[in-house]
Amino acid sequence: MKRLNLNAVFGAAAIVTTAGLWLVLSVVKDEYAAGLALFGGVGFWALFFALKAAVTRGLSRPNGAGRERAAGKRKPLFGGVKERARGIRAFFSECGGKVIASMSVMGLGQLLQKRWAKGAVYLIIQAGAAVFFVMRGAAMLAGLFTLGTVRGNAWYGVEGDNSVTMLIMGIFAVIVLIIYFALYAANVRDAFAAQKAIERGKEPPGIIQGLKNLIDAKFYKTALFIPIAGVCLFNVLPIIFMILVAFTNYGGAIVPPALVDWKGFESFAKILSLGEFAPTFVKILGWNVLWAVASTALGYFGGLGLALLFNKKCVKGKAFWRAFPILAYAVPGFISLLGFKFMFSAGGPINQMITKGGGATVLFLGLSSKWISRVIGLAVSAWISIPTSMLLATGILSNMNKDLYEAARIDGAGPLRQFVSLTLPFVLFATTPVLITSFIGNFNNFGIFFFLRGGFISEGYFLASDTDLLINWLYRLSIDNNYYSIGAAISLIIFIITSAVSLTVYVRSSSFKREDTYK
Image (tube, rainbow, N blue to C red; front, side, top):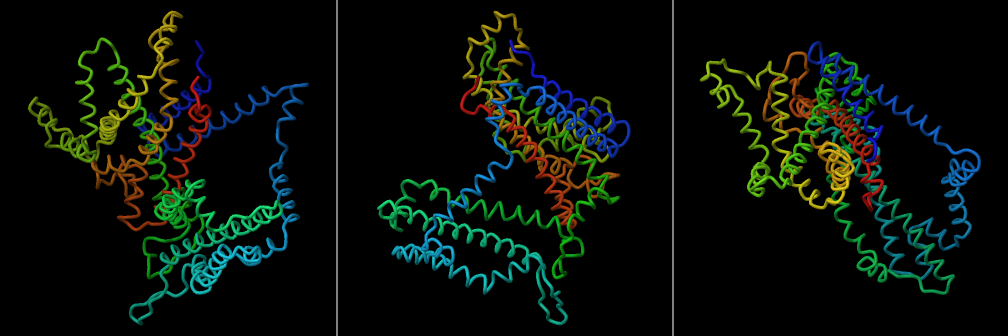
């Protein structure tokens, strides 16, 4: 049997020590100090892993002939840039006059090559782009930088500039400009390809052949055009808008008709340094990280445990027992949340049983019940997510090779060792993308604490409760209190954290490195 991976051991130690330090300080002292401890712990372990990687790389370098062989395979620094520069020089050296004409005016080279239809299309595109930027585009691009110069005044009938609208339209103009440059490059490539075809004595493809290729050989481009356009319109554009808003002073009293200005990193400085924002941000971020890790682990390993249990031969009526988690999964999530809120409320059935037994009413979700509320939130998250993990793990475990377990038992491996060395790697290989998605979803899980404890403001927090996640605090700041730039900065921080964690974990996982096979 293989030994445990030292990286996994050190990674587990990093999580346990950092989370343990955060938990102890948050319980016995102050969550602000706990958040600083979290940052310090993460920084320490990041430095440790960086040094470990550097030392390991240095020790693993070959020497002698091996080093020369490795050096022969290693690409020189800036080799890709030099290679591309040589390709560009070769391209310009081979360009004929008609290709240069296409560089000057879109479609002109195609017209000189007597490809009238395609040349006319490119010429119309250039004319339309010129009209757009002369009539509106240039002003839209200028508005992206100025965000307006005339403030509206209803008393004097001055309409003024709407900075938010100008920001959105400026982003749209940039996207149009990018599309124009892409079409411009396609025009040059098309003229160059036609020149090469003519030099080989072949007829260059016309617009009809191009349309046939889009339906046949390049149908994937046709099929992906509408989804990509939808993603750019409904996903990319709002994300870019949110990122740019984070660098303005939009929010509070500065909303249209007031003019919004670019302020650089002022919003981030407020989050990290200003007295009312910084402590709340550090506390919520620390709790958010712990929540994402704990809720993901509970849902994943809870579902895997149920799947392993139901796969046991000694369990009778497996279909019957599997029905209960599936029913829990079938119920809409917000109904489950409202049900838990009623169960743990002051007049709910749990408190009724406590009072009938002679006890006092327990405010499970009250203002002072921070950790009880957090534990209840974790239980609700597990209740909602475990069925999904169980169904996924059940299907994966059905494909396990039973001979591996038989060989492991012959080697003397116990159940725990079999789980660590056989079951867990196999399941993780197949479910790493799902696990990453679950982590991101839990990190941005808006609904659980919004439904369980929505409306509370805890002492020591600025417009937040002690169970709020960053996404909940973002909602309160931007929607309820008009701190749009601060909310956009928090959104950007959330995006950086989740994307960095997900990409790092996925790139280092077996699912990415050995996606074609499992060994």
